[in-house]
Amino acid sequence: MSNGEGTKDGNRDASRQAATIDARARARAEVHRLADTMRDASIVRLLREESARQARLAVDAAGIHADFTRHRLPLPALDALLALARAVDLEGQRNAMFDGASINFTERRPAWHVALRRPPHAQAAGDPVAAEVARTFERMFDFAEAVRDGRWRAAGGEPIASVVHVGIGGSHLGPQLACEALAHDAGRLDLRFLSNVDPASFERATAGLDPRTTLAIVASKSWHTTETARNAQALRRWFARAGIEREALQRHFVAVTSNVDAAAGFGLAPDALFPMWDWVGGRYSLWSAIGLPIVLAIGSANFRAMLDGAHAMDRHFREAPLERNAPVLMALVSLWNRLVLDGGTEVVVPYSDALRSLVAYLQQLQMESNGKRIGRDGEPVPWQTVPAIWGSTGTDAQHSFFQALHQGTSVHPVDFVVVVPPDGDDEHRGRALLANALAQIEALACGRRSDDVDPMLAKHRSTPGNRPSSVLLLDTLDARSFGALIALYEHKTAALGWLWEIDSFDQWGVELGKVLASDIEPMLDESAHERGGDVRSAQRPAATPGAIDTPHATVQPLITRIRKALAARDARRAVPPAA
Image (cartoon, rainbow, N blue to C red; front, side, top):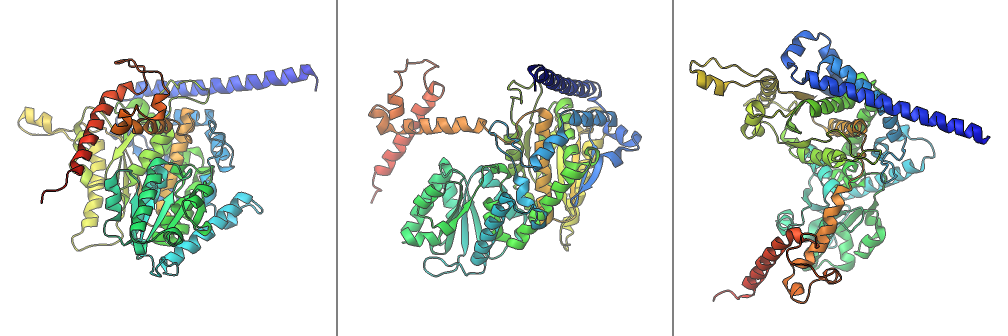
């Protein structure tokens, strides 16, 4: 190729890139224009006047009925949002994720959690990733079933009766949610979860357990996460007090990690180590060996069913047109609400006690994924990104924060996750649960004008309505529908990241606090302070009293105050109790 031809090709590429950027800008500008003019659209009027609304904004996907009809989203605005989705090449980015491309562009790696959910018949022959996943699942299932049926014995020959899972963030929230949601399928094992480094959490997690019949799982990709490492050390000491040490400990400890050498140095046997891969992010990892406690709880067949449900949602996300694609519609509705509503939050209310940990899981999934301000071009994005996620289970939530949802000055859209109860009961409580969910959905949309004869009281009793909500209806909560539900939220999160032009798969904002905590902790030691501080502090230039630009100056008064409190605590402990 001549230099002239190369220049022409480069010019054509530059022209295409400029045209793509221009198309994105025009599509986004149209969405923002419509948001400015349609932000006060009446939900009731839209339901009454848009005859195609139900057909376009309600969809069935992988066994879940998703209803987005009760939002301030006129159908012309939906068309503009769909045009934006095409302008940002949402379909192409989605396909790249499924193909294992490095869509996590700041870390230059795939986000390939969907590969974990492919059934064996859908795997390409000779695919090394598929083979590695299959080997890991086979080992995990064999181990879990051996523990469940009593073939895996503790050091003293007893069957395992309880399991303590140690992990934090994605290594904890997903497994705990799944074990609670599917507890009706659980076997005999008593499963506990330990995440917080607070000593009280350890005491609660081990209360009433016998070390001689307890198995500990340590889930840590790096094996250096402070909270997990210290809780693992505390568990090892707990076992040692019961005489379980060295080789005996290998019958009571297993690990999920990518740092095999560190885990082996901790005293774990090779056959008790399960791998993690850098192409699976922590908050997307419950489908991997991180899901070991799930398999221990519900068995390998139910875990497979959970994978199948997620894969069904994967297929829907990849194959359904954008107009009928539940995760895409969910993301478009969320983007629209971020533009037209003033609350800056999204509320999640599961009408199922089994899903009581769903909100905490979604907080990490959505806020850690999309809590970003820098776009693909390395510049701050000029639009709002992730809303704050919060909520609680219904009907409890109706008696705490629903007052603000109905009559507060800010508008917060709600996801109602409604599950048809599995069994009837003599008191019809399940039916009452469903009726309450439907009542809140209608009350938020329609409101109420009080006819009280006292005009002042009538104002206080009236509710404005026009408060948006989505409904995710599950006919049953089982392993398959649970998998589909989690995959639905995963894909909504990824789609929003592509729409906002950010990286949903990194988490650089989490790192700074870890670094500062490791620096500050030695400063809380009074004796180290009296000796001149820790090594890192000694290597710094002398601080100027009162200067705000010295290390940790913004929290130095708190460090001093806490140091005194710790010293007083230790002094009290040193005083022998009165006779």
